[in-house]
Image (tube, rainbow, N blue to C red):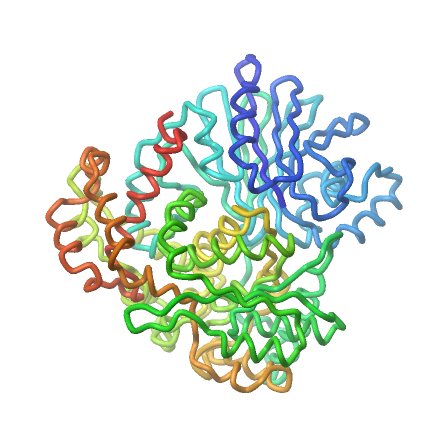
Length: 599
């Protein structure tokens, strides 16, 4: 787990090493254990290292193999790297390290860009072929590892974060109106390749992009799960599904223990993270480090779920760390959390993950997390209303239960400069829903959420907040083999028992019933969800600042109406509408204040 960056020139000039150095410096938290820059010809590669596998300097990056004529920067972890290393050794490849990054390098030489089909893990990497000058960029199947791009005539820059990319300078920071529409409609999700900035794009997940020495580009998507019954499983019983999914998850959590440092678990007390703990205990893990977080109550909402996490920790005899965040720490953490975001994210969970990661990083460098189960197995309350909806009506029904605003409401919120005369968010969802490979409306919604919403909301949130503290988070529910299997599971089994029914039934006998049958919980941060006091002042200051007035994204009378009743207007999913509006402005200002958004 690291931060990568670089610049490739296609116009005959030399890369800007100073710009690459600035990008590296912006990613020190992602990789506090080492740094490197490599320049050869038209390519300059930069890297910040978090040492997890092969802690020696031999595993450092950029990794260059002069014999093979390849240079690599890599972020992530290949969980089956040992098996692939043995296979490559059998083909005559000689290794100078025990790092999984070298397996990526040798694997690319052996199998070309088809190497990604063999990788089980999370990754973003860039390989430069030194003789031809060809550059290959790739991102893992579920987009767990980010890769942002800034392309101008004759030049490509890339980095693991937008703040790092902006630090290089010369980036168009005008607002992308399509991305803005998505942000305000699609629950702050901005699907790839867009970002909120005109000059920054992101490589879509499960995508390989190849660029030759002249800048000619080809891209291909190498993986896409099918959300429809598999012929070989059509006669499976509910119990067959429970056993198969549990076995697949067993393999996923076991894979994610590969490391040369201890691995802990973020234990919220919900069924997902609790099941990860149970399966690791079943596999013989003793004194597993687990971590839970809680906040002060506010606005009539409880700030912790300790009762459930304590029960799980006691049941499986973990080495449990209960972290309570005093209310006085909440406000100072908000600006730092915003600064850690690669893109503006509206979820209140961000502050919780940020503060949790700060504390956890004092004990371990790697954790497993239960993120992703709700999207993969139908755990959210917007899925049941889609049961039985005709496939031709999928997008209409989905928009009613998920979209924050209609197209008309988006335009009503925005000043005329940012208006669009069409609805790109509805168009995007409709195109995605209509594509073949999803049999029912529920399947179509799950596919969209798994391959888009999950990646650009919960997954990005976990990556940004953990890596802000040099902490690597691994997500077994996003093991691609588990996702492929779950995608073919009948929707009614997923939606049973209030959501994730098949997982709940599979967990009986492993977890305490109190955890299985509890009401679905969330990371509770009531001090932000309910805006008042100093947090509300922070919002008010951001929206009323000269920079916000000069940017003039929102109509002033709408902003005043929201500020007059800061906790009244909620989105379809119950988020605070004022917080969503303010978060974008706070993020834009943070980028400017850090002198990284003025290029």
